[in-house]
Length: 305
Ligand code: AMP
Ligand code: MN
Ligand code: MN
Ligand code: MN
Image (cartoon, rainbow, N blue to C red; front, side, top):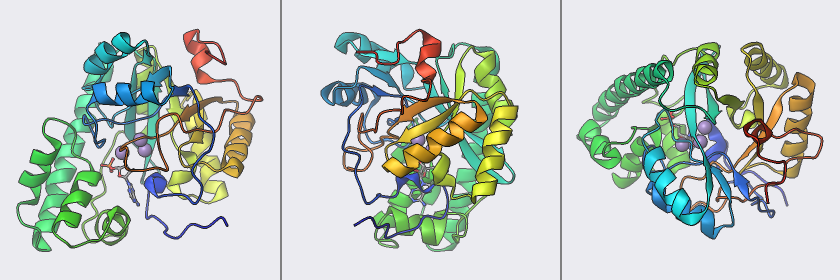
């Protein structure tokens, strides 16, 4: 039976779907490490990818490239082809959407300035979320998330872990629903850079931009069409057609949207944590044959093996 028991408030791609994708892919272009809200060090993400049979990987932490050097070192030891990656937060029509940058030059100055701006926005938002949570009785929220994130980016996942630790919420979904999501009591809207600007940073650094997890924004069909149109108008390159949480019907729908808007296709599990079976490295439905893969832009054949 296909059933979703819990609805998220926004960016709910981390909700467990009813079906864990049965297929596996040797290419995975979306995952996270301790540099943002993943639970594994970058080198351990590479090891886990290798163990899962992934041969081509992009580590795409939220608004940071900090994990890439150690990921690259581990990838060369394990024979994994690593594509530079990042998941950038951006603003579109008062909402947050995520754009995955791939295959860019991480030394590009304009991109680095952009990342510094997003990181400052993250810090300012974290301070305000912490103030709201402290007013709701969560002690030392800012210091504790800072300690938890060490030198990585502070994300709402870190706040969710605090709420669970303090017994205010039973799980991540409830933490987002009650506190951190768009209708939650400690929600703070972040002034991310606008979508076209973020795409331009990636292009300026020689990379490709993929609109991440199109169904995670819970938009109506017309709003989703507007978002993808705006992304295309901003010169965006690809749509993430296959996500860790995609069911076959989602893949077919996303493929149709990519085709209609003239976008390439990308695939990414959005792996964060080995304990989340619904988004594991390489657990992805294959890209439909009608879609040109974004990785062909990097000279990698459609079927790299
Ligand atoms: P941030 O970029 O700091 O706003 O945090 C985004 C992270 O929170 C992403 O990794 C999402 O997977 C996660 N997230 C967003 N909304 C939800 C939700 N409703 N339930 C669980 N996780 C969520
Ligand atoms: Mn995340
Ligand atoms: Mn995302
Ligand atoms: Mn992600």
